[in-house]
Length: 326
Image (cartoon, rainbow, N blue to C red; front, side, top):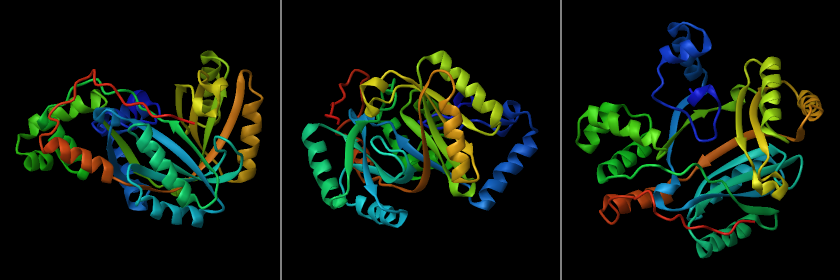
């Protein structure tokens, strides 16, 4: 379901058909459809979450980390994050963080809308952390949106974000245009990277570890990816460049992100050790995903402003307000 068949951090293409998936994976369309229905019955697949690219609002995406003692404490912190203006999501993870190993961490996604606002937000997070370690903020910015949005586009974005699993016909009825017009504009919004579709999947139904493998060069990242695909045919690989928040030495490092099915912590340790010995590998970081929550208030407020006519369009040359990062 991901573009080019590669797992990417900025979501999937919801327009892909079961016939296209079937061609990619070498199954019949009926088999693909049956598997997706099974996912839904088992609670593994729960539809989509849709997020607008924050660059359409002229701001960045930032991330912070709060260390917690256990998952229960992390889940309690997720509830409190909803009260912080400009926080977009929270997710509990276990594994390597940017500054420590084998810790329970709450990842906090938030808006980077200028130095003063970010400073206030971080001050609130320190208060919520109650003495626990707080790292960040780090830049977590997606590719820039490449299109300008007309008022009708903003209306379609608002309708899809509010109800991401609605049909084209339902969205068309809500915004008062034809389904054909909605389908055309939705495709433009997806291609132009104005909207990101994320599958709502429960990874607890499929035990897996998420590995980030840093390499010396791009050619070595390709070799590591091939090695993982040979050993784990069902893994989901993603290749990209740099994670600067780990330190300047990693800002330009090619890295490979992959979800690998595992059965035990011992198996994870053996996998990390074996990958660390591959030529060109600089660092391997394992991480397990726990409960998460999204907080749409800030985005809803921004969309309401556009729909009120205060900002009918967004020009591609709008300058994004940079926020200081740690």
